[in-house]
Length: 287
Image (spheres, rainbow, N blue to C red):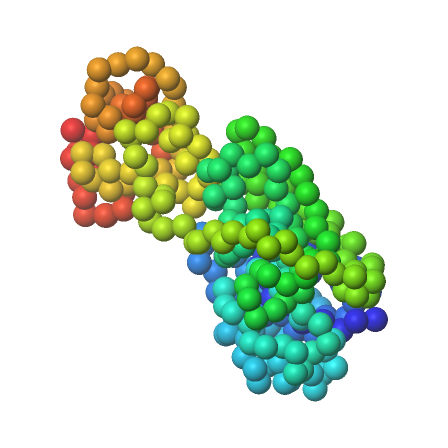
């Protein structure tokens, strides 16, 4: 029976559950406070509390690793974490990370958005040994699945969650052999930086297909746009190709709070949105 500590958010609670269900003994949970965008922790904290575990919201430090060693912890499992973990090797026997891509492709903190933007045909989750270099350790195993032509942030996120839980069951049941026979990553790697506000901002001079893909890629994270120079966040939008003579970015039709904006080769219908600046007048947006 392995004793483990885990870093996790709600998105990857399935990994936590998989190791517990395999008979591994949890020691402690490290998580982060919710940002209400990509990090939610309520469910995973409640699960840890039901297991009578200590929960830590502050950054995992070297002294925490020392404490884990005193508690007889064997392994640190990283299943999403906002911070870099200190060198674990003086204190623990093992450390593994579940990364949401097929390594060595798309190392980095949040590669799923770029996966949709790049129209990837396949995606997956990789479990690898933790080393000094981010996402570069030897690979224990991976779980792969296809992506669809209309993939969105939420569908890909759910596929990753399911694949991660399945992979975790496999890792827990075969850990020693997988660790001993872990395979080095190929030299041809690439790193995906965390998206920026500019990445989230729609460019209506692009074609409809590219704009809709960007909307799908960010999903509930929400894209931004400027309508009559007023910044908004888009919750839901539709689009279609249609020849026109309008300048891209110009609102050409309004119905209630729905706005149709010209794009390069058609129109984007903004169905649900909110102001980024609470003091900006809705009248200014709608013209």
